[in-house]
Amino acid sequence: MSVTAPRFSSSDPVLRVQGLQVSFFTERGELRVVDDVSFDIAPGETLALVGESGSGKTVTALALMGLIDPPGRIVQGQIELKGQALSGLSETQMQQLRGRRIGMIFQEPMTSLNPVFTIGDQIGEVLLRHLAVDAAAARTQVLKLLDEVGIPDASQRIDRYPHELSGGMKQRVMIAMAIACQPDLLIADEPTTALDVTIQAQILALLKELQRKTGMAMLFITHDLGIVSDIAERVAVMYAGQIVELAPRATFFTDPQHPYSQKLFRALPNRGKRGAPLEAMSFYRALRSSLGAMQEPIAAMD
Image 1 (cartoon, rainbow, N blue to C red):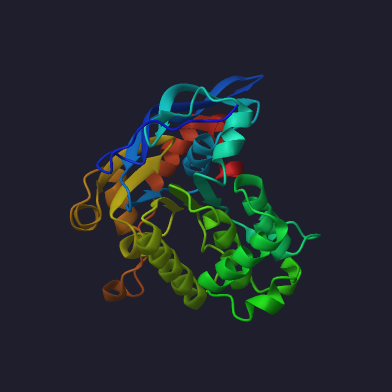
Image 2 (cartoon, rainbow, N blue to C red):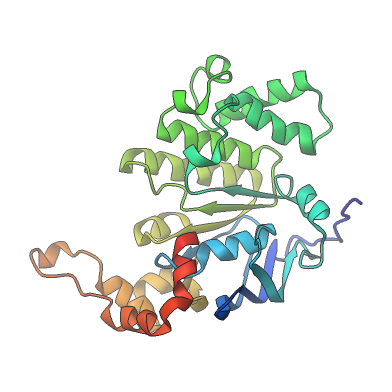
């Protein structure tokens, strides 16, 4: 059964999330991992979802993609992509959307790419699955994508396996897969975590340029405030499954309102205070500890 998108106005948000709640059900009861989360993203906008490991960022992204597996499930809330409700769609219908209208760049390209298939085959599979193209046309498009994401000598590297590429190259391949069908929404989950600062800057510049060309909305998940200042228009701060602050980038960096946000800034290194100890997140660590085992399965996913 195909999915028909409703009429969409350019003034409407590409993504709207309202009251999202994700829980995991174990022998010890319900563990609420994402708790009443709401936000939207406009066309061409980047929203940075910021928070420490275990805050629920990745689980939120997986919920948007319809990839929450048992014992977890979406308990309540609405997710709309260009006005189309996703929450009630079947797995078959979600498969039509994933890769076609929603692209995702995962944290670890080495584990996300299949080691026994060439990068050309893996990018081409996205095109063959979602677009009406044959194998020859798909290969031509893959070469264009590799060139677009900055992989030199694309005609030679298209038949390489993931282990034959550097970390930065593998991440570029993941980006090519995510944008292959020109999605409405790109979810980038810590896409530069394992890269050195030079490659990191190149990947961020690439994402911004691709967004400028396509007008796609982007949810950028990170714990790095330096990256946030460079790439996002708005910032959502997540803690213990909740968004505790949502603000334009300039406002967030000059006048953070929530105590947790303020604490994040005070914990950053300061050249003017060289040798001084960094302020610990003791209050919030204590709060997390008080939650006990409820947070344990979250940290493993985020």
